[in-house]
Length: 199
Ligand SMILES: C[S@@+](CC[C@H](N)C(=O)[O-])C[C@H]1O[C@@H](n2cnc3c(N)ncnc32)[C@H](O)[C@@H]1O
Image 1 (cartoon, rainbow, N blue to C red):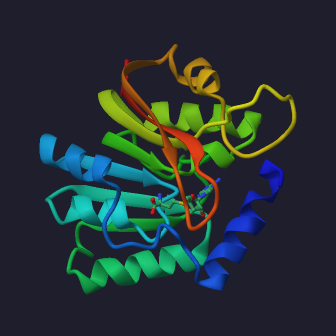
Image 2 (image 1 turned 45 degrees about the horizontal axis):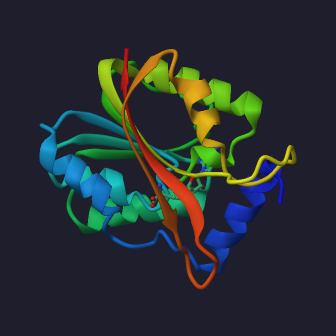
């Protein structure tokens, strides 16, 4: 399926109710990050049901989330209300490629599984938006589906070198952790966590 179909594919996923990232808790990497940082302002790109933003808000962060699926945003708002952090977390229906409605004030930008669905032109807009909203020295933490093959065909995921080409000129790479991810009963795919700091 091409990257242009990402919205339809994700909408169908949410409408089916089979959402593998539907847990209340974010991935352990995000929980560990929250243990090690003082609270500030965080932005979760492609926030889904808001598990990372809500987790951070529960630990004193002012958090915001953006997603282009309204079903996801509605549920994220309901979850935040249910756990009593509505005052600390805001969710926005929008695209991660246009963050012009947000101020340039974030200490931390997270992306757990969103950017790898973007096409080339959108990736540049996304990178520029992340750069604009992050304070100098702020952190950008990315979990992405990596492409393994060298085939020059449209597809899911991003090449590891594509991440470096996009970010390494304006952000400092502090750490990378390559791994495999398995969702439901499908074959595992290559994935990675990237920890960047805005120059
Ligand atoms: C794999 S899900 C992960 C959700 C969330 N980060 C989590 O870990 O629970 C990716 C999310 O990115 C959102 N997304 C993908 N492309 C987007 C775009 N261009 N603008 C806004 N949201 C997008 C999807 O709707 C989906 O909710």
